Image (cartoon, rainbow over all chains, first blue to last red):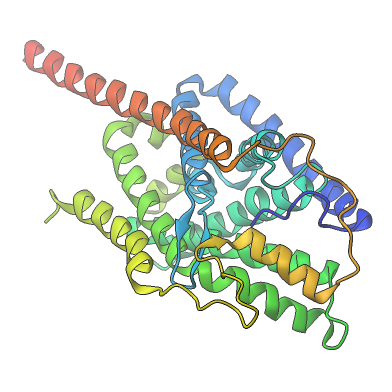
Length: 225
Length: 110
């Protein structure tokens, strides 16, 4: 889902950066506050960040004959809510943009928006929704992480479509083309991401019970249950 | 079943990742004899799509640093995954030890 360096027109590049910046800023503030109030959650934050590092480095072949990678931001969003993942995802994207020429500085805003903002929000909403219809915990995590992964790539297709509308069919035709590149390829990878998120979440539930019960997103459930 | 759950899930991920390697055939060369790359990055394909929709578009900014070869790039990707995996390993190790010591302590008390 990395839009390559220079491959967004100037106006779009600036627009997405301006849109992403407040989310990253608020995310930093919320992480700082969290660590001050609950220092024991540092380990969990580290796990969420490390998971994003690993998953977004794994380029996996897909049935469409091309390669793509998962995002890893869904797990952290389920744990901490969506805002914490914006700066974490931004760090990963910055690392890849600066050292790997994967993505770019001018497209950082757009890439942060899809992978570190919209994806995590989808993960969090899907998780809440799944739990509120009493879906079991594991399947809820799976759905949240894999749909966040899909949503990230669909967002990228949309960002490219409005930047490069098809001369004949307009934005819609262009969206269909970019979604053809990204969305189909991503389906098996999204399933992988969902499964891996469930595995890590199982381990967290088993090994870090205390820290987990202090997370807001899990507290509210206990009250309900 | 519960005991093998994680193992089954990991095997499933490996299977999903490996299946395309066996299933997808190498695409035939194009009419002018050019080889078509298989398992190309989707990001690159998006770049190609841009150039078919807007052939006149010129990227207005270039990466400041580019890995000097595919090998160097894979080194950096491995580094990224290594950093993440290293931390995850540390977490699992320290957390299981903590859980075990707690159990032993409780036993000693009782």
